Length: 516
Image: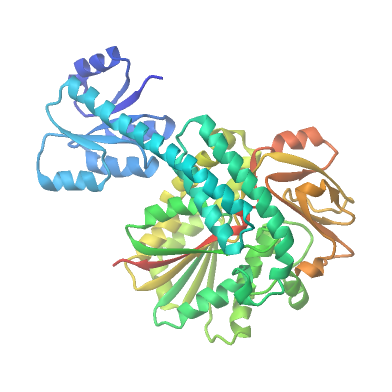
């Protein structure tokens, strides 16, 4: 495969002989004369390496470098400069260049630089592959030795780490990793099926932190301090996506990430209401029947009372603070709040909900364009990284990094790439969700789901009448026999939530302290 080079230089016409030399060597060279055009091309195309002039009119090389790394953090960039000033080189190296060359450069220098950088990448990929194959047996043993909830967190962290390290490895190795993740989720589903019932009845010391525990265990200790505390809940955020965000936040914060488990179903009406209320769904149904109407699974109807639930939890736990709450559904809403985020430091506690990642998950199911842009887990992760880099959330966090505040970032549930369908039978009032359902007399493949005959045993709402629940395991999703092929084609290989998988249940809970 030919190596693709993007060369950015305002005097690109003078470099024509260099480009001809490279093309004769089998390289593909795309020339542009300014940083703006370079950014446009990088958003649309994949390049193996970029040569970037440091001194250009308008957007200079260092500014362009920063923007390039926001779009594609891993792309190798070689800075070409006329200056040997130490400060410029430190700025360039701080911007994560792969190398720099001093003008004038000759074609042979360019070829040697390309080979050195890309061979380094190949060697790194080979070493990562060798390391994963060595750890394969270790992870398999961990999965087979009946891990507890804490050990399942370690397994998930290891698998996610390899998923990110091996993203550019050969297809065969990636399939081995994917098969191991699937095997882990098979065992994890069985583990949850066996243990979850007991968790709901265990003392806090004998189970993981669950959704209703977060405010009391994490937030209340923070607000006892003098500083202002912020809670950001990013709906439907997976751990691998958080790792990308975390890397972008590390220049601004000291970050301590731990984990908690979402309740079942891993869906916003259950898990996020549980976070803000400090109650399980059945308790919400019993104590606040007017707050949770059960007409459908529409998030806007089932989660429109989170502010009330949060305030009531503070009152119930006798915490004499009036919490602030904001839900960001539209870009304009986030921008307005970001512009006045400093005002929230006057309050003791503020909670913010961001719905973009969840919206992206649902939109991908209905959009062939998004499926093409994000065809797999790696690409979907990059899509969320692009959002975060330009989001009002990132702007808020950058502003708060200059304040003496405490910040907690978490999510209500994750999502899993659903690749296998299973037929489900039920009455016409059965809910429409793909990874969990409630209704009368629900039936499906016993190996594909956790069956809950008595909702009260799992602290779930009884709703209207005698209903039961089914919770999908592994990467299954439910389809009715009617129009089976149509919905199979539509939802296969979509990201869904509501079920019992590592990606949906094991969730990051990060504490950020500003470095400044």
